[in-house]
Image (cartoon, rainbow, N blue to C red; front, side, top):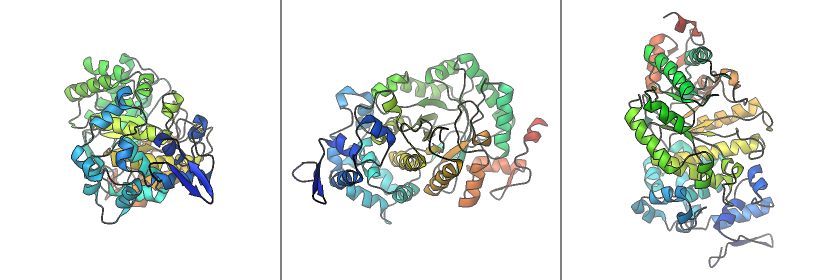
Amino acid sequence: MTDGILAATLFGHRYEFRDIKDLLAKANEEKSGDRLAGIAAESAAERMAAKFVLAEVTLETLRANPAVPYDEDEVTRVIDDAVNEAAYGQIKGWAVGELREWLLADTTTNEMIRQAAGGMTAEMVAAVTKLMSNLDLMLAASKIRNVKHCNNTIGLAGTLGSRCQPNHQTDSVEGIRAAVYEGLSFGSGDSVIGINPSDDSVGSVSRLLEMTHEVITRWEIPTQNCVLAHVSTQMEAMRHGAPLGLVFQSLSGSQKGCESFGINVGMLDEAYALAKRYAVATGPNYMYFETGQGAELSADAHHGADQLVMEARCYGLAKRYDPFQVNTVVGFIGPEYLYDSTQIARAGLEDHFMGKLTGLSMGCDVCYTNHARSTQNENENLAVLLGAAGVNFIMGIPMGDDSMLSYQSTSYHDAPSLRALLRMRPLPEFEAWMEGLGLMRDGRLTDRAGDASFFLAR
């Protein structure tokens, strides 16, 4: 890059990029969604040229060139207004390549990264991600610890949480209860007992909240419940006294994308205020968000930006609410956006790193749809990579096959297997609870684990 011109010559061929948005898109790793949008690099050589140019772009330039202009998009405004100007002043002159080297340096600590991250926008986070290999993303993410508390503590070093996801095609209260008991018996549910409802009505959502709260209360389980209905439904349920632990919502990286979900910043602000007032959890972190690369393109709300940049903007929006956990449902949206296991794995590692760098308690639904080019073995490979990178939580689904959402994920067995493999533990309060019931001893499951029948004896 010379004299502000975004161009590079490789092997005698000159590659030019019309603006920062185009440069960021061309520097992205291969994604079927970017090809669908018509913004991907045409060749590996063009991609490398874009990375070469991007490495010399300053963070100040990236802040001045958000994916959607400040005066047109409230997500941009949320992200930019939250920048710590003192921290930004320390890093604004850095080139993206310098930021990458600093993040990966052995002398750069968690506290140093967290301080600098306060001065970053989503576009900065996305840019440095594009210059990193998979191993780079794992190493950098493993340095960052964002600890949060709801009814228990997530994000501590050496811990791996698991969301118990006991979905049911008809929202059968007793069917879901049985699946909850099975998950708990394997140690799944320490991050949250979270149900995707098939019926989004206030009455149905309230019934599921009441049942899961009753299980948590009766067994004195240090965890929280959540029904992943639309945030407006949860708000109404809270106003009517439903016992809710975490407030959920899917996010988008643009105002137009959020509007396609039926939300805006004002609604999320209201939900956050209601959670602090009515949630049955102790807090202070009450929110649960989900994201996934490609959602903005599917809603024609990407504004010509690549799906990695838009995903980073989701995390910038989530940061406003200091959530207990954020989950990238990485392979759920389908092969139109992430074609195969290679692209899914890359996106999972990218999302985890970007969420951590943004300051979030970051988890991943390690998953794929049945029409994607992936297998269960490849799914498990990504789970191991994320575990080594310090992911805060994964999913626990009966047999790894969601009977309501019809996609493949991680099972109740997988978090315990990863904990054993990587010498990790459940969230500490939950581990103490399992020890008290004889389900775990010294960080390992006992012979009693997996037999949920004892829950029916009381």
